[in-house]
Length: 78
Image (cartoon, rainbow, N blue to C red; front, top):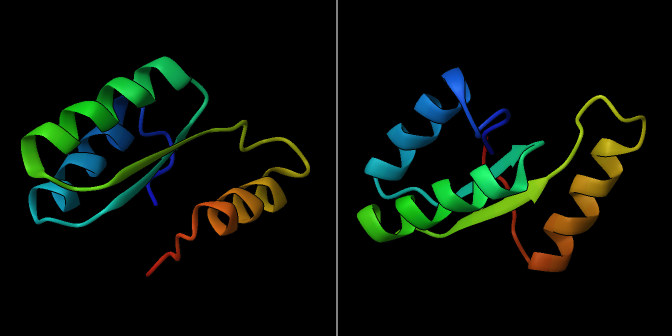
């Protein structure tokens, strides 16, 4: 799970595990940028990249993320 994956350090952090073949959950506020990154990582590295456009400062953000991950059948390995 990579937060702020649409730009800056989060973008750089998303590319490293993808290059190692790790599937990703990309979190951030810009759905279009996240989708573009996910498409790039899928094509380049053959990984699964799930996109969750979410405002992490929202009070219920954590619950929304957990619910979406459950809906997708995705577990997160830390």
